[in-house]
Image 1 (cartoon, rainbow over the protein chains, first blue to last red):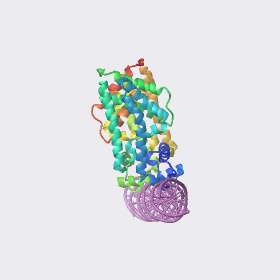
Image 2: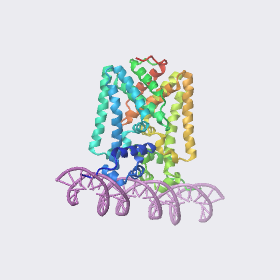
Image 3: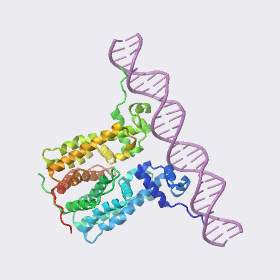
Image 4: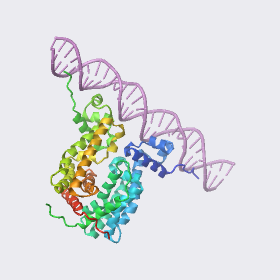
Length: 196
Length: 196
DNA sequence: TCGGTTCTGGAGAGGTCTCTCTAATACGGA
DNA sequence: TCCGTATTAGAGAGACCTCTCCAGAACCGA
């Protein structure tokens, strides 16, 4: 029986994403967001109690969307293939949705987490736990050092994506191959070679 | 014969660095900086025509300081050793000066470069050129793909440092060894192995 | 000792932002 | 049809910020 909502929460978050990418996370003001989305500021505050909660929601939504495809890669029955596709996935996902990728290139710190309510802080912690436990499990199955695995399937793809997106450009088609190949190389070479 | 300055430009930049690390680059206000450094805001504006120029200077100074040690590594007579020490250097430098490292974990985009004056924009471009040409030269000497080299000595160490500094923590002692070993592995494996 | 120059110190104009508040509005169910 | 509720729409209080401005302070050379 209530009046139905006229604006969609996801639309607001999409506008916030666009503004974050055009500026910086904390550079997004509710006033500007409202103008940009054609929504009165009152309606924004009707959905989000504060700017911090809005930014938090944007961060959490983006991480969820990324993990939705990334975690299944790590859980592949064939552990070796899982690591390779996971590394690829980082690049492919970023290529498909460069704006979201640009957002993940920031850190949670940049979204003023000290102002988040407990509920959102807890969700972020759960996301971290999910990721860490998936990585630990895969490292066990591969019988590889956890640090080494994280470097191969997270750090390295992340940094490559970062460099390619840095100057507003897109990610070229061959990048995923390069990244997969590097990850593969790192995971095959188990024994540290004696230096010099 | 003029009145000698009472405050030092570098001290102001140091304070700006501390605030940037505690918040975000654009989160640093001149008002807060002045309070934090015990300097009247007029004296800040006597040195920097605007907040944007101050932030630009902080970015440029930090990049210069990093390159000062990094570029010589790349230029090592022994190309192979050069690549290894360069990768190490990223980690060691970040370990020695975590605050500056945290600043470099941002991108230039986060320092509002569209508001920089031409002179500072030019300096940033020169920094980019210096780095790129050093990397190209080393790639040639190693007879290795440039992209591969960048991944080994820039992207990978960068991302590892990022992860270790993420939650306000420090970088453990062994990280440089791990990174050097990974870089070495990537550069030795020249031929892409057939997949699967 | 004095003059010229650079720097300090702080007040405040003008702008933007966050968030609050309230009257009006639109809908579903009885 | 009418009521109750969720939502809209926008004005505005209060805080903070950037940058300007200028009188006075501090120093050096002559």
